[in-house]
Image (tube, rainbow, N blue to C red; front, side, top):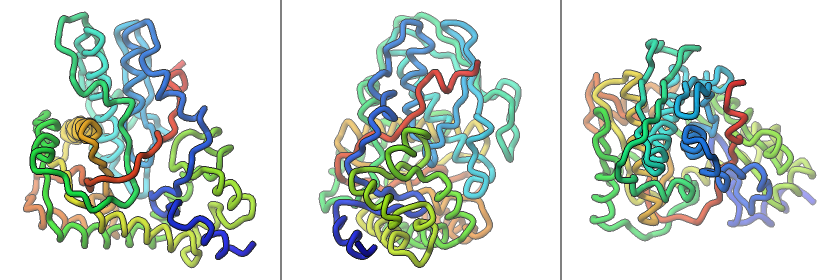
Length: 375
């Protein structure tokens, strides 16, 4: 069957991926998602809290965490040296934000188990340009009678929704509740705006990343096409489902096809992403007073709290990270988005996500906890 026929068969039920947008169909690699159902099934408190932390949102699903266990109540968190995004995240800002999301879920899970989480951030300092072999945080759990965080119950239900959103607009009350949930964490402030100018910037930024060969190549390298690839590497960008298997076997859908800027898959993927941007019913954003590692970490903690509250409220959230990135081709869009938001240096816009009401999505694949623990 010709490629065009394959694409017609898929129709509107599948979104083709380019530069971070999923091809979506009924997922089949259930073993790659076992971490979502096994969370909390550990006796010792440190593993129990970590089993929830590994479900944190993170850039390109790189899952950059590596943990050294010291005891049942103590551990050291590192950035895995093999999980950077050197092209689109050359300063490890996004990776650090993902680690901040990890730390917030760890904190929330600890409180649910009657422990206080003491987090000593970057105890040996941090490199301003790239995360190196020094620890990201030392984690210590202490028994404490404290109220469980109400967002805990949403950890295993949280999703990132890449589908186009419906015409339904979140209520003013829900938007206010969402903003309050993120709160003020170590200087990271969450805000919500309906600024239409952001759509234009996000469109332009996505086009730049999709059509710049070396930035798009980084995404393609992290694509897991088909059930076997997802099972073998439950990270990166998963592309799976019954029709995907057929397309993959036919050669109509492969890494080579997705890397071809003249291919139908690439063009349709970029259109899907742009349609998603256009469907935004608002934008959730996190700004910090500076761009230090501590502020980047705080931004991740604030973002995931907002993501959890959105889950509780039934609101979909999808990060639009392209315009915030630091590689040369994106400099104009990075400046434009700060101008639109009225953010002046040294303050930094760390997270920008569209919000609205989308489709129910499945969980992203995850490496199991044991694979993230240093031997």
